[in-house]
Image (cartoon, rainbow, N blue to C red; front, side):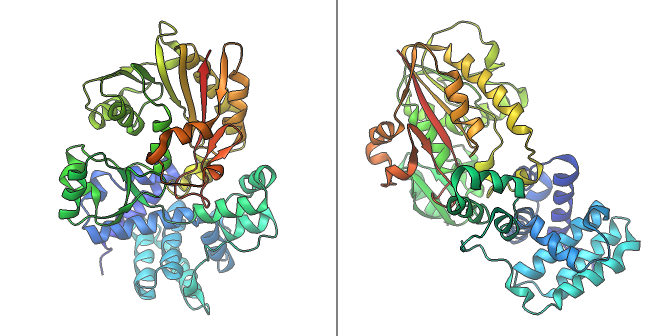
Length: 442
């Protein structure tokens, strides 16, 4: 029996993620993956992201039934085993024999035929284990320690220990549980006719939970619609949309680290008469940005924002800086396995440079929104506090949220703020984890 197209793609993606630093979300939309049927593509997405979310938990199961240590296994063998174990323990609709057979065939076809018997034995032992089909629970239980949380929710222990120290055991448990849930696909809709068109194409939508202009996709593939192909609708998490809305109205706007362009798009929609300069360091990402945001009032500039010429010329600035992305682990689970503690030394230094450069671009009375999709203090409050100095003040994000009025569907504003900062948190809010600060030049 040949290997199914879906599992061949899954295997290839998992190896690229592990060996070449690829990102699953991008690889799942590659030309190779896009040739899969809708059903096969859904299966590939489920297994790839499921394996990455539960990697350490799956490795624990493999280790318990293996004569070899996990680090000693070839990458191809380990990828096939993780695929097989995930299907055995999480996907009731896939027969055990199919999960085992195709995983073993993948080992053979990857020129690791000598390991085929080993893989077969491990998978059969796990399949025969009583109650194995139950899978792992994503319910938040009473946590005993960071170690228990890390094991139960498949997170690196050092990262969970950080969250427990900074946020407390209960909030850390909610974050870990939230990271293991499949995130909703959300879009921003400005026109009622686009929503009607999407519904006619079989897309079932629900109101956004954070923003009234957002919609949650319940059924259907939004990327196959005419509106998506023509750029009239784009997929974007609600917290990302919210950050862009905090920028407000301006006549001359700077978007410092603009790609992929979701926030730039909202800035253009909210400010059709403004001149918007979208700066992106990498040329290939700038081209993608231009494709996503064709608005004529947006000028895309390939440049390092830290080296921009001229000063104090913008009345609104957005600095959504590169970060660890720990607020997006449900969407990008591979991040948690790559992240190292030293990243929280190197990245904040770069973030501070970008913020200080962006602050020089603000005209008197202008405002800057500094944001990350990180949960880490070093990348958020610490960076802002180091950058603040004479001539700037920190505005209260609660007042900025109140300014949005009916645009905001989430009514518990207190849960969205920490001091003067915006903070959305996985497990508490229906979105990614984002941080934002609003600075004003006085």
